Length: 318
Image (tube, rainbow, N blue to C red):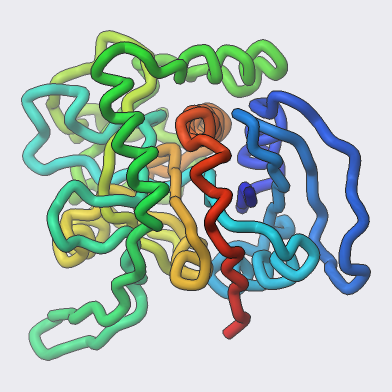
């Protein structure tokens, strides 16, 4: 089982902290330039790999998994676990748990029939009248992964998931991954620009979106199409426009489109910002922890015996 990350200081740390056991490094291909960490979760042997610092994007993600699959030719399932930018509903949902909030988790599988798991938003056709046609809708996750995801949905409704336990394990080992507090979840109107300030301390609070507030820090997850591309989304108006053209996607990120078509991959993203100009680092570590907690619950649900009949799927660069 492969666990993929993009950020070594948050996503990969959360992945290592949520392991059940650490394993010694096995021998591997000497031509492989990746660095790995090894362990187990839920009876699955895990190899954790991360992109090099400051090298995000689709091509970098592809270059991560190709040598990885050569060094570990028996890999069958890939989880891409990390942070992303959330797309809140407009107008806001009446129930706060139905809307996207900072620290939530978005899983790349839409509840809408026929919608893709991932859309590459910067791969398409620019048409007349500022219109855009997307031409890159990527594979849905393997049926076995979707079955496990369905079990999580049922288990969660029955109160049988252990997201909070997984988060507590991470936070007990590193307090930097603690929840920043509900009062620090601020959503500004899509039309309101942040400007050049270092943080939002001077942003106009009259520009905040009025919406129902959460009364708990319990982990909330959503199933949705995820928008992937090589550019960082930092524009609320553009965010909403692309989301509507992409099956009402609820998350932006920068790596999944580079691997999902060539691997059995499930994309799990903790929401660290609202993909607008008001980005900051306050929620990054907690969002990474939330995604890791969901990833662990998924592996506890996906029994190792389910994967025994699968053949490894080797990705190809390019």
